[in-house]
Amino acid sequence: MHCIREPEMYRYEIIVYWSEQDNAFIAEVPELPGCMADGSTYEEVMKNVQVIIREWIETATQLGRDIPEPKGKLMYA
Image (cartoon, rainbow, N blue to C red; front, side, top):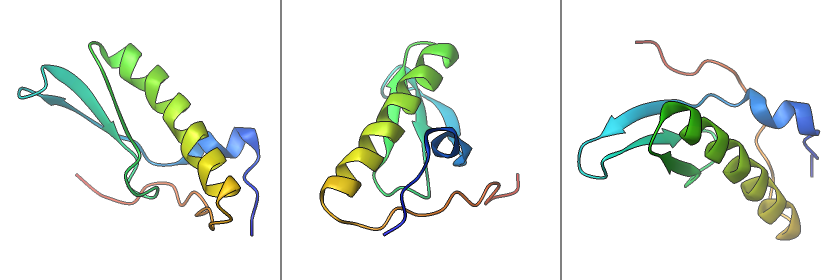
């Protein structure tokens, strides 16, 4: 099992978009299945997604699951 150091956890690609349905910004982390956050502003969603990434990694570690290495840019617009 690989342990991600704190600075590395923020190297995951994050996709941010506005959701009319939720009336909020949504941030998804494609490399961490189910890892998403929302916020009423871009700044808020980015702050929230960092917390969720940390919690996702902590939970995976506690459950003995592998944590993917951050790969950087995954998609091209």
